[in-house]
Amino acid sequence: MAHDIEMLQEDIVQWLDREHPERKEQAVWAKLFEELAEVMVDPTDIGEWADIIIVQLDLANRYGHYMDDILMVARQKLEINKGRKWEINKHGVMKHVKEVSC
Image (cartoon, rainbow, N blue to C red):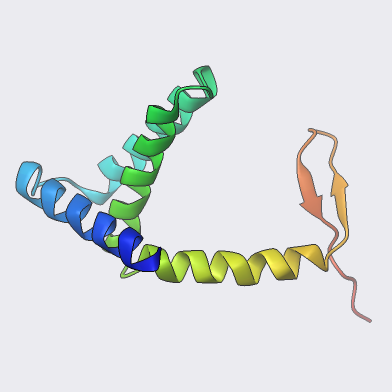
């Protein structure tokens, strides 16, 4: 699976470099937020979920991150999160409870 995601990321970046070599980082971030908004409008549209991944892989590459590494760190972070205490804040957002050190 890691090999597949690496190949996908490489293909996406190569395509975008050919199609839009002048794209600016700020514009790519704006595109990610645009795609997130589109998923919020219709979360059943799997194509919009794919668009988020395409933009995310381009952005990650710009910062020297590869998706297989991100997936590995996501697994590690999940294990950390499983050990935390969680609450829902006044806005309905799940947040982990910060440990208070003496």
